[in-house]
Length: 242
Length: 345
Image 1 (cartoon, one colour):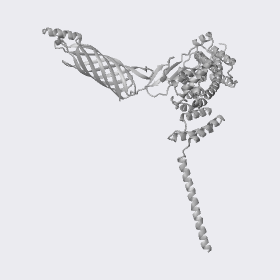
Image 2 (cartoon, rainbow over the protein chains, first blue to last red):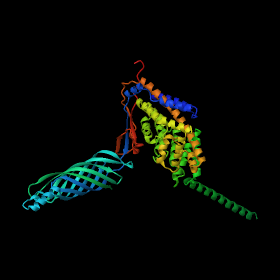
Image 3 (cartoon, rainbow over the protein chains, first blue to last red):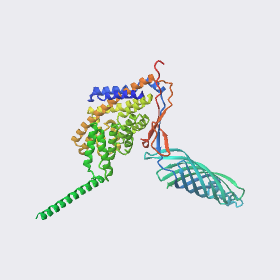
């Protein structure tokens, strides 16, 4: 029934095809303008049409630009550590190796080397100790040297970025969980980490990540017992997909 | 004497026979060799064959045309340097198959034309019509959505809107028909004004045309693209215009380009006029159906256009904003028409 009606419309349209050629006179152009203006129906018809809206759906379906099935990624990172010992400032350089099982899951290993310096408060206390050797402040500090851990990451959310109108880069937001060992001035301790970030797949081989994670371990200042610490680490990573 | 003469006669006969047999054998050998390795076609021969195929199709002999095109394809594929544009060959073959109503073979040929080809737009428009003929409105609409984006504002014709209107009509999506009409009006009213100004020899239109021709000569797409909003859409690909560029900016070439542009403008206005009338018909049909349709009827059946990608895909909602990388990647889910209200109820 529907196709019969459609055929009728097409037949009528076909008959219209035989109309004489347009010479381009002002009368003909005015008539064309008037025909165009009359398109669109009136408001009553539009209201009725909207009440019968079938809510058809359209979407964009694209392949992933960068294949991350069974693929290795090596990366180097720089991170800043917030929290932890109040008298030290710590940052780190890291190396990581991830194996992408599929675009949703990856497992990996990470190695971080920490560099430490005294914070402003630490400097102030250190100067006070110099002036007064009876103070024993440095017995209450401990610092991280390096750490090694295994991670598992889940990438549930994807999207894409318009990079300055030059190209489009797809990204994935991910969460990660990790466990390993951290080497401190006082010895080794187990460490747990959890966090998330966004990985941007710039080209078939290059990637970048912005990551924020929580890391926990217990250090042992000389003065006392094990002291649980919660750190926040922010890092920027540049990677190469093999 | 007779014996000697007989000997000479028979030896001459044997020699000539062996020569005949040898030449026949070599003729067979060369024929089979040429069948296995046909002589390479020259470009002129290929063009002649192609023109012949086009002529046959125009004379309503698509089968003969198809045979020529198939033979031509083998020659074009086998050559190290292509004798003609293989995409043009695919497009033409798709059209001939469409003419023969072999619609199942048509989509593959149209899809083989990549986005980088200048024939991509035409191919996708014709593919939409092929899907419509196959009663696959969901696939037709998936193609048409790409063509109706703002990227192709100045290059796609008004017939695309007719195709979209018929697609919406076949799935009883009336609100989309009226939205389409509104967009058609918004897009083509300014265009009609601009083309009419060109026909009336307005100085602004002539200046615009000269700038466009300069940009075309320098192959500066960035400059040319916005100018095409007020010029005939086929200007940049018209062979006569491109021919006149060699002598541009001489007065003779300007006048010839202006005359040709006015011819193109007249043709485009005629095209718009016909398509406006078709869109009016579609609207009228929609209004009639809206009166007959049972508003409370459920629309449970959904037709999905699907997508050609394998493996995991990324799916984004199609909004008014379309990114360039999304062109050609639309997928639609259309609900089928509900049953009509019975008379008297």
